[in-house]
Image (tube, rainbow over all chains, first blue to last red; front, side, top):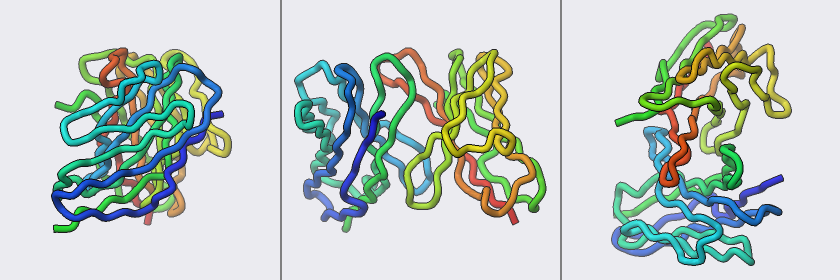
Length: 114
Length: 116
């Protein structure tokens, strides 16, 4: 079974500063995908960034980047130059390479303070 | 634009009513769709996997007779909450996978169900 753990229920960051959200996972799979989703108050699920486990290079998407440590089963999200619109719930998710089912973490509520 | 349409976005009804929620994939076919339930400030909990042309696969603890799932076509899955009670009040979200390396799952905008 796959489990995804987010140990930070709530975090806050000053506008324009950098914040890192933690995620660890447990799996026996060797190939899989990892994702970070953002859920603002509107409750829409918005894909922030994705990482393929067989790629060693950390994914980057504008102000968002990940630190993927496969051996440690760690997948943290770094948000640089935080903006007020980044305020949301952030979910880490795991998907097997051979399937479509997502396994979500418990979420981190991020507040960007003006 | 949205690639998965979920309807309705909000439902308020009396206890004992059955409520149907639709999830449609737009511009792509989805032989599989997923239904999630989300309580306030909590994560998305997978309820069931909807399979086109066959029975849905329910997660442990989810009542099949309470949450009826029908995947009538390659673009439509429905979740019917039968004889809804206040404890069924929640936010329900569907998703559909697409064979795209950049966007493996498309989520609907969710349905907020409130049972009085």
